[in-house]
Length: 442
Image (cartoon, rainbow, N blue to C red):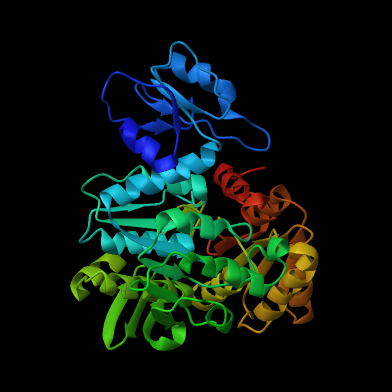
């Protein structure tokens, strides 16, 4: 962006102007800053990027943004703004609008990253597409993503996460999606938001800047339908809209609106995610053959149904994150499809004051499934609540306090013919179990 565009985008005051007419790039991190960048220092509760302006200049930055107004002599150009994060958002939004790609925004309590990756797999069959990297789905992640596009970019996929009300609205203000997708509104973050209604309200903020000729695609949930205030085209979907033709490990085949699709992943929830992808792809005028090819090309990313062979065990690691809805759905799928199943469940986080009851609810749900030949291992005090409900139903259960003790048990007692499924919140660090199994002895 040129100096005049920077001023126009964020209303910056130019404290020092460059005599050169240059296009500038931005960096918020002195560790990765490149020669010629402009340093944009962000601030947080425990850090202030403005303390590192001199470091950025010594590493080759041409200039910087400041809220304080201090001018370092070695800088070629200096901009003053009231709030550097707001400036970053305004710059990213301006740059995105300058390029002008179609924007698909995706949010949801669970499945949003999977849906984003699946949608990218499909859209990139036809379009030059850029997506949110990994789970960088907050406002800073949006800015980083927006600055990855180039004049050839045709579609931008923006994943939008949140921890409270107002956060998705903020991202949407600058992303301005043409298509907005809500995968679901469930119990994730209920400890912060207090109720399912508030969660749905937060998710529906994605429509605040959706134009009237835009499209809203969402799971067919009353809590979403009762809150969304979008007047344009709305498409609701659910697993009840499809005919499942075949289900087996790492494969699903289904019919939707008279057409057959295949996925190289299992699970009704993945079929549900793919419906949102199919609808969005058709709205972007893709053909059936490319959509089918894109869905077949999709592969889960790390820690999302990641299948590995470790020390003779087949291990499915789905421990990137967990909430009651995703835990119920994934465990149900696993015990339906795999022989000699062993389910290792850990604590779920951010569920608030009723966290123990949410864990017991998962236990009661799983107790109603076909668990006759399933071994359940739980790790942690809250996961023990799941175990207690399963025990009441006569399930085979063992409880453990930590990852090391459950790893010891697996190595000493389980048969290599078992398939092991790992599900817990990220904070539980189930990757430690993976590493312990790789070592083979503790």
